[in-house]
Amino acid sequence: MNLLDVVALTAPAGKLPAGAVGTIIEVFEQGCFLVEFVDDEGRTVALETVGQNCLLKLRYDLAQEPTASRSVTAGMSDAEFEAWLVTQGAVPMFEERRRSLNLDGSGAL
Image (cartoon, rainbow, N blue to C red):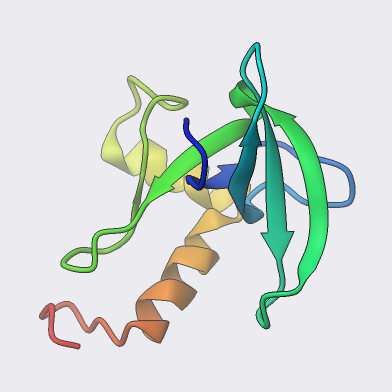
């Protein structure tokens, strides 16, 4: 993971639940990162130092539905991965992002 990567928590951190989405703003040694979490208006709501094992790197491709890096869930089938995302609270965030981009499955914006 790198500076400015968008990530989701795979476990609660501080007052944040698993599935919270933030941006890496500092990279420390030994796989630790300072992650900033903001509200819908861009105001910082939390800064947490999180280990790589508690983060899932998210990637956005505007031509497709947002996807997540599979390193944490390697070996899972697509169905198992989607079920895991639901348990982490990430799917509602993806669906909200999909609606905000007005993606209707046709790829048209």
